[in-house]
Length: 190
Image (cartoon, rainbow, N blue to C red; front, side):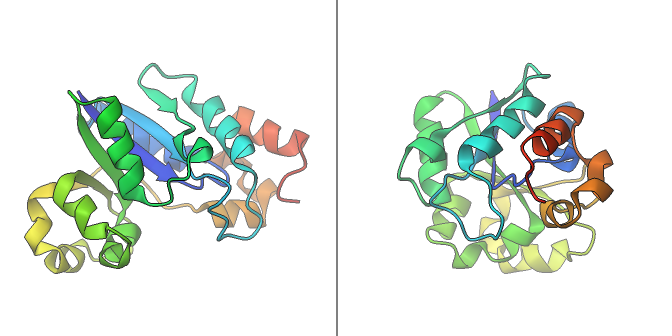
């Protein structure tokens, strides 16, 4: 089985995150996607909700699908680097292939990540192309790892969690109905 690990702050998770996961499965890039919200120690963004709230919002999305799930690994461990999370899932699913799902924005600077080259050497990196990024130029920088980089041409439009946080009511259509209700009921991002 091919398992995609989709890490992120998911602050909040939105329909683009859901659509990416579903489309990756529909187009046979992976068989299953596990969302892994960052833990509370990873608070580099303003207005970051607690990991338990972000986990719950992702759970509201994934519960509708048999092949999507959410895992609290980064919430309950001291793992701070993506390689540690990927290694954890490789140990959990030793017979399966583990894919790291990221956008071209993340791949662009993966060479500056702690252990970024270890990710590129040891895992398949499933890259979601953003409309504004020059994927050929990015791939040229990582030509030594080209066999492990898979560009998913799934035609997903861009929307960011930042845009949603900054004007939540204007972006209701970009959120799952249950996620929007959870946000409003808890007065998040006001």
